[in-house]
Length: 68
Image 1: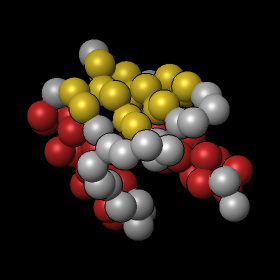
Image 2: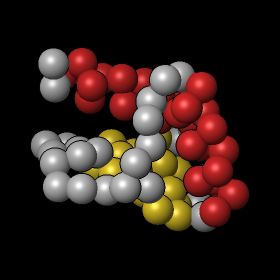
Image 3: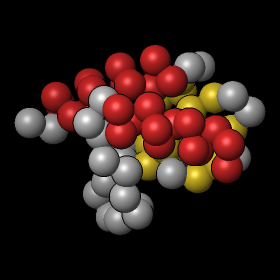
Image 4: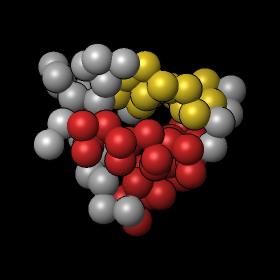
């Protein structure tokens, strides 16, 4: 995860509360970029732009279900 420290802190907290583990970026993992109150989710096959943490959680959950 990269971006503003304050947004990153609250994003990590929200993800942890929903049982999503945040770790260092490695090959083949999902990366979240935070820019100007937008969350950009980069996965292996697609990029999704989210306008809120709620949208981010939906996007991450859909990526997790696609990878099962």
